[in-house]
Image (cartoon, rainbow, N blue to C red):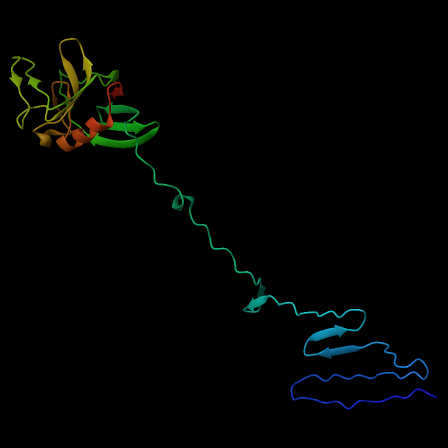
Amino acid sequence: MGQSRIDLPETKQPGAQSCSVTPDFPSKAGWRWRGLLAGCLGWSLLAGPSWALLSPVPAPLSTGGELRSATPPLPPLGEATDHLPPRVDPIYASHVVLRLSDRRVYLYDGDQLWVSYPVAVGREGWATPTGNFMVQRKQADPTWRHPFTGALVPPGPDNPLGRHWVGFWSDGNNVIGFHGTPQEELIGQAVSHGCVRMRNADVAEFFERVQVGTPVVVEP
């Protein structure tokens, strides 16, 4: 017998792709499929010992006609300082620099300026000594001794030293240091007998930011 060919009718659904199968009928060996290839609705089926289903691969997204990755970009990290702890001020200054011409005292943390304050310095004939010194003594609510009469003035609002004393020089009899004053309007002038006058609020901070042994450099 010769080979026979049967064309199976197609059934189409609106909007769907058609599938067609055309089997072969051998005359002696019975049914034999040479191969099956069908494409339906975006899937590919290959006949053989196993079936493979090939799923579609998502295409890159596009914006404004340009292709871009389907993976969203990472957000910016920002400035490094946004993620670092704030700088903590040191407990004590590493050293103090008094510049007589500036009428100002500077506190340093290493090479970095920490804070500065305006001052009054020694007047002509009683100039504040220059050179390298160190804090020798700290005294809260000091008693003042008049340099000429030797009279003592106890702690209080009329004490010329205010409420804080930070001494850095002595010749064995006289002493010079930083201190407050009841006459803050004279800050910025050369009016003292060698000492360094500061505003009372400033010297209170200064008192807490230095310690005995802190280097003091006095420059012209």
